[in-house]
Length: 430
Image 1 (cartoon, helix red, strand yellow):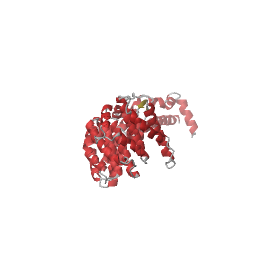
Image 2 (cartoon, rainbow, N blue to C red):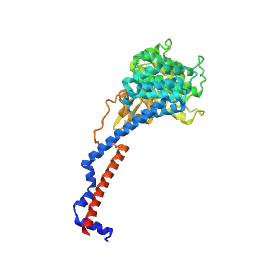
Image 3 (cartoon, rainbow, N blue to C red):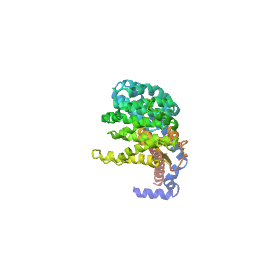
Image 4 (cartoon, one colour):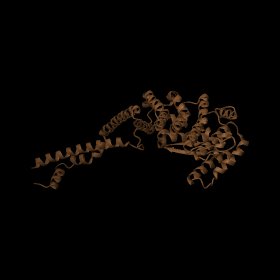
């Protein structure tokens, strides 16, 4: 019986063209007419994958009302991660009332971590809903306000409620009356870090300092949404207007023993100066001279009792603030994402971007590219749509796997067909 090598030679001799072309032309066969079916199959499977993901999201949403507090926290985190990783406004809009109801329940009945994760989920919803964010904000505002004011509530829950109230207002609208109400709430929270009447520093625990820093940052974010003329008038009337802290009170926060409080207070003052200078070029010149001395001390701080890392961060931040107030040098930053670049100029823009980074983390670039709410905030215009079949666009891993599987299947069919022909030829030969 002929060996394997003789069989292969016989096949080639009897069919010198057709069989070899069939084998070697596998690549062109796949990239030809059947390539569309492979891609269509990949697209169909993408739809299947999307449906599967939505079913998975629905399961997690159902878990937001489970009996176990630990289970609810776990589901809040998973749903939050889903809304962080992907831009899915239509999906959220369809389930807005279900999600809002689950969040409100956990805010009212939960404690600490559950309140914190629930409040954050509300902000992730507002970051995607755009025009519909106002409904979520208004529904949850009374409950969050109560928690933020409750001295008996956990620090984690109060801090996140302060952040969420500010972010939800920032993402949903710019109403002066809302600003005044929230400003009074937040300034009452961080008032515990003000200097005492005799100039002595208030005794604040590290845990409470975290809350005060969160409230100061939240208040600063609200400032960035306001008209510079309104802010200037409110600050001038701060002595009689309880909704606004005075510049002297804010300056006193720079003496806090807690780094986060000092840093957030410095950034708040930088935003106030930016808004003030937009209103008047010689804004608060006399008061600024006194402030500069405090800023210079913080920018060159060498106290040995402070941690080295804390001093490094503090110096860098306060050098920028000092440079802006003394020399009017505005900080500028460029953020690259995909084929676009976001230019941040000024303290208001930096504050807004840092707030979004706090919410979205590493996924901020995904939302800058896809999320129209954030694109409107940072004046990026309409989302750029990649052309179909763009060779520079990376194929998703799941789709690539399906295409490879389809190509392998096509090659296998061709090879089996070739083997069948060869077997028939050998049988005829013998």
